[in-house]
Image 1 (cartoon, rainbow, N blue to C red):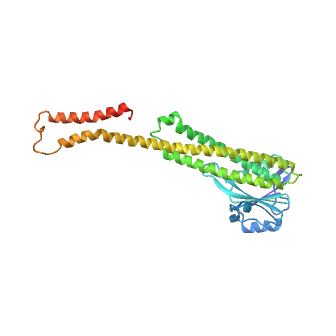
Image 2: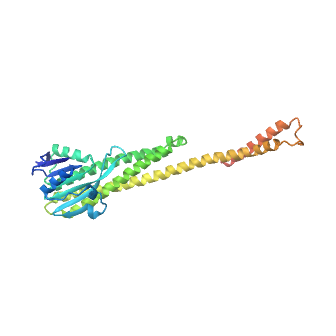
Image 3: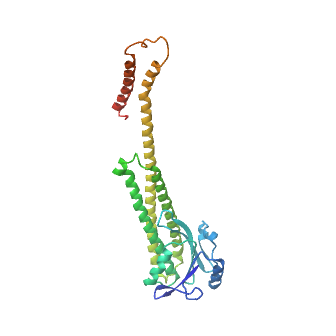
Amino acid sequence: MIRAFALADGRLKPADVQSDAPVWWDLLDPTRAEETDLEARLGIELPTRDEMQEIEISSRLYFEDGAAYLTALVLSHTDSDDAVIAPITFILKDGRLVTIRYSEPRAFTFFPQRAEKTALGLADGVAVLLGLIEAIVDRVADVLERTGREVDAISRGIFGQQGAEGRRGSNYKTTLETIGRKGDLTSNIRDSLATLERLLAFLGPKLGPAQAEAQEHLRALVADVRSLSDHADFISQKITFLLDATLGLINIEQSAIIKIFSVAAVVFLPPTLVASIYGMNFEFMPELSWRYGYPFAIGLMILSAVLPWLYFKRRGWL
């Protein structure tokens, strides 16, 4: 699918894909026929999906035939922890922008709607690109803020008073799964911000002196991306701490359970020894015909169990 947008009084408006009016062509899961037609009309070569997924910087950021090819990893489906990170390529040539994507980030829906209703002062494809990246960064900031709140809630559940009181019955498996999902999401956010920062750093020197407003906008975006990267690093460190703390609590609980079984084994060992002695079927046993032999054996077993328990209690092992 191809969408096209033209400029009118600093705003975006839908345009005919086949006309020369568009300043931005947005390709979503394009067919080969759509790619071939656009390549012929704009005189550029569109990268394939496999080429967009290359990890080398030289394959993501480069100039070719007067066009700038900029590829970044962008998050989509960010309403849940199952966010998808996929490459999106931005192509700038002669003041026009082409985007190629195989995912549906919300920024590509919200930004055209906002730019159509509000005059953002868009003058060319560079301004559209920076406005689009700003929308992507804003969305990342929202996701990061939500993730931070959820991580704080996990922390309160682990270390709070309610968490301490109900720790024995807590579901550590669920907690670990939640922490793991937050860790994956934060890692994807950091990867996306890193590629966006490299994209902006690559684009900055290519803006001419006449594009002072675009340069100022770009510097503001770089500052925002770096700030979000620092915040993502902080959340990532907190997630690692919570993971270590949860594993530590699991070990403590397991140790407490093992201690209980160990103490129980030691407490019942002497009574078992007494019962074993008096359970032997020898013909000649001194207490065999003793009137008080049975209560004596029972009392001896109880006493041999109570004394170790009192000793452990006094030492604070229970």
